[in-house]
Length: 197
Image 1 (cartoon, rainbow, N blue to C red):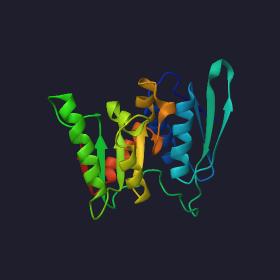
Image 2: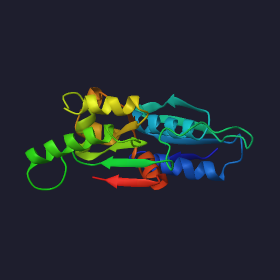
Image 3: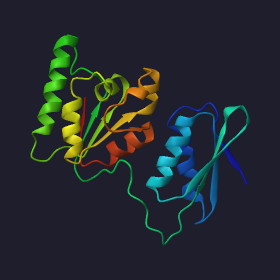
Image 4: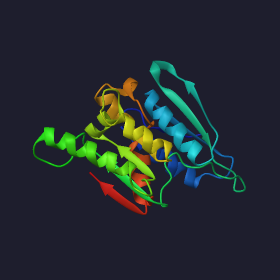
């Protein structure tokens, strides 16, 4: 059986390549993907779960990981996606400040914006954080309370794993879950409306 070798490939390439292979796979057929880090393994497992496909993994030599995903049968019900889209508003936040100019003012504005989201009659379906925006969903952020309020109202809050790793703050995530760029792109593409900050 052919193995999709994505060693050294950055997010979201492993997920994209696996999804391409799954589209071509017959129900019950296994797709095997070789990755070199645990974040890629987690991203593949989340994607598989979102598609209703069973998955497993085996540690390989040199720290590599072989992920096996079994294509869902035609009559199986797919599990809900980790980042559903299409029913409402998605807000994508790529900075820990709002707007260009003075960062102190930008920090005040982003806090006010996120608080305002909690006051909407219909809160956003999804809040996506990437680049320095991930700092807003981690310990020490002054918007954690508002983000938890949104989460309690049903908003899905997801932060880019590659970005959290880059800033070395993945262990400080205080609200929501870790996601990948493919899931972020999918959520934005499928949303009824997107606000991109």
